[in-house]
Image (cartoon, rainbow over all chains, first blue to last red; front, top):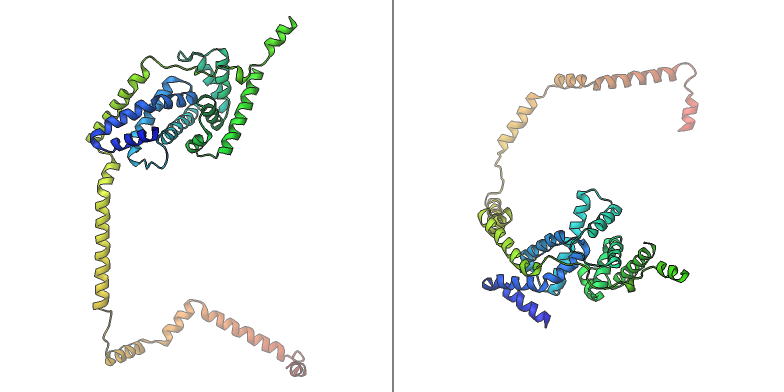
Length: 182
Length: 156
């Protein structure tokens, strides 16, 4: 049903008179899922907002060339994930941050973030997640919070299901270790 | 008391942490977001109408330039192909002209000029040097007993 609906939206997007309407519907349909996906990677609202805007601009520019080989939501997630990872890379380059400094600064930012409403343990969990390598962080968030199927994750991240399962297992172990030690 | 202390040291485990989303957004963020995206796209489109980007210009010109290149290629090949078939490179030379050429070359040939050229390039010097060395060998071999004719005969 959802696929059918995406197909209808794509069909409407390709008609110039309904293009804006269809895009508006796509934004409304996927903005929250993409926002939370990016927010869990970036943590801070302002940066997430910038990334989400850039993601939808890219979607607008590329939607004509979307060939429907994959689901629309897979394609959207892929763009949002790449945008978020590129943002993190450029942020580390801009401030010459090694990974350990990035962990600390992200943790400090989270403590003063007015849009973080979690308790102490949830804060600790987020700090533990920040210590993970990017790939494990993505996999952990998508599996643990979004409860996404490995097959869908595999399409979004272009990684085999086996490798994703291993990444998730390592991520959980590291998080448990961090929670035990801190 | 000891039990209390022990309990407080139990590390928090992942399963004990609430799974709810701990983040929030400013009020009405998701209601306003589609409008913000729409205005950004409209602004970009207006901008690109005023200043067409190189990419857009290239997209318009590319098929036309490709057509011009194909036509020019065919014209080049056609012209040279036609010339090759219709006007092969043939030079008509009569027997008299050939004999005239050789006579001219013969009269221009100068032995002394050739020797002076060789001399300039030190080629003759090597030649004379070699000759002097040969003479020295002959002189050595013919000196009294240095030349053993029997040995040479036995060798060959």
